Image 1 (cartoon, rainbow, N blue to C red):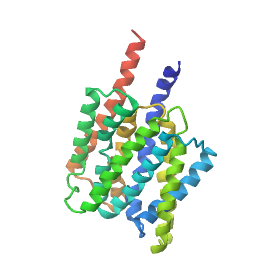
Image 2 (cartoon, rainbow, N blue to C red):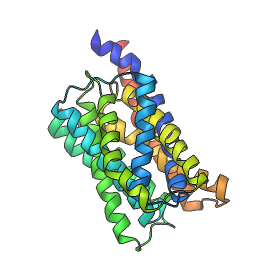
Image 3 (tube, helix red, strand yellow):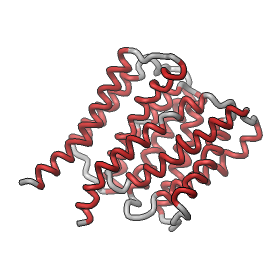
Image 4 (cartoon, one colour):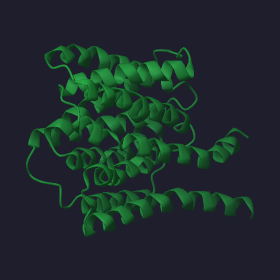
Length: 287
């Protein structure tokens, strides 16, 4: 019965992940627009995010389990390294390299979660990676090596965060997000005094903390209970697809032919990966 209930919630969870990725996709544009130290941006964004999450969900359930603490540290590493990467390389490089996470998730989920990874999963990951390379083929340069390395670290942290969150599917994963935000705040806020943002920068920080981080992670924590770890890292690849859309809307830069082709491939691969298991389950129930 519990498994049946989880399967019924799965389509809703997938929609929540899609909404999460859409809001996450605002990050690159906003981070680039704030004149402040990268760690200060990460820290203040997390302060605001933590407040939003606590207001929305109430007092968190902190049990100090290994999974909860692991997810908190992975979260802090993920958001700090991503902000730093975005400041030290192109936004396209940062988001593309971070989204190598599904590859790491395959190994981590198989070892830690005992979740079966089949040939279909491997093919999906390969297609997604190929599609994202096509999507950013014009922007992925050889410069910004430090930023690229930071982005790779963010991708590894993202994978670890996904797995540790999935390990709490029967617990309170939102507690990890709050702890991770507090840890990020402790690390980053002191750097705020090295260069204060202007009025517009503070406005962007508020948007980052609420719409781009706080609300999405509330949705993410709800969804993670009803999808696999691999799905929780694959579906959000909608985020790097939407990033250039916001750039086009606000800066007038149109994506090229390679980008459009890559976007179609990624969306198609993720859609097929999510829909096929549902169809298989429906067929099994009617046989």
